[in-house]
Image 1: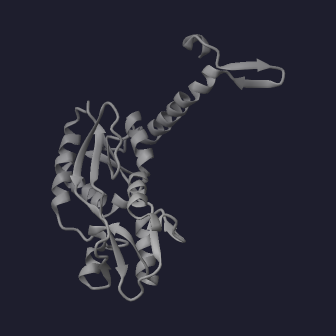
Image 2: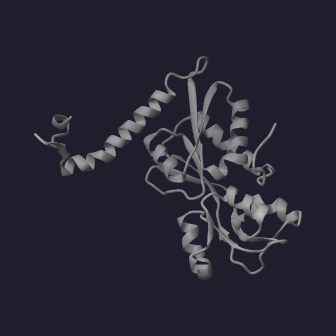
Image 3: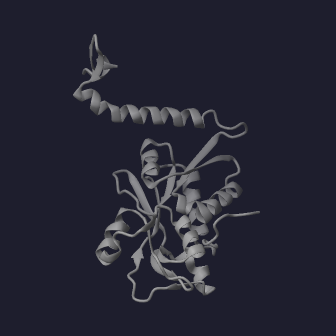
Amino acid sequence: MESQLGCRLFIRNRAGARLTSDGERFVTYATQLVQTWETAKRDLPLPRGYDKLLSLGAEVSLSSPLMLAWVQRLRQALPDHALRSDVASDNELLKKLELGALDAALVHQPAYWPGLQVEQVLEEKLIQVVQVAHPEPYIYVDWGPAFREQHDLALPGNMRSALSFSLGTLALQYLLQCGGRGYFRTRVVQRYLDEGILKQVEQAPEFSYPVYLVYARAAQSPALFRAIELLHEVAKDDYDWSRWNYEI
């Protein structure tokens, strides 16, 4: 490998081996090669009876109902395609897109890298809601670095909350069961607002939090283009985003 790259990756001696500066830089590429190989082992061979695969990803908060409904629609529209659904963090999804391990991914905070196409699927916002019966404490939900920066500028008094969550669905369940107030997606809390369990905090700032689809700009797959069309159709449907789980 060193001869092919034209540089030394290791310094070897009786004590063992250590990376050279070129070797340290190569670690990133080596990691990507390993990840690509692991993905290939998982995806190949295709399931019996299928000769095409569509790999889609989504953040945890978008896996249900949006990703679930999308996969259901795809199974009906593309019966000759095997489908793989990958739920992960936005950073993991974007890395897999870059490596070609995913065809497309649903995220709230896309990266505008060269070669990536970013399309808005849904407009959404984060609003502050309070449980009517028990309005305290303030619950901080980590909706990502962009929200964190805007939140801390708009609400410096709530920068350091004694209660914080990194998963919105978990935070909402705590708020509903134990009380409190915090920021949540409008679609997710709408049912509880309608039922009077929660109330929107008046004059509290709101934060934009759209849903985006990210995919390779050079993609030429007719199946992917059809999948994108179906996603936009699914996004127009009225789903209950407040449900914690989906039972048959």
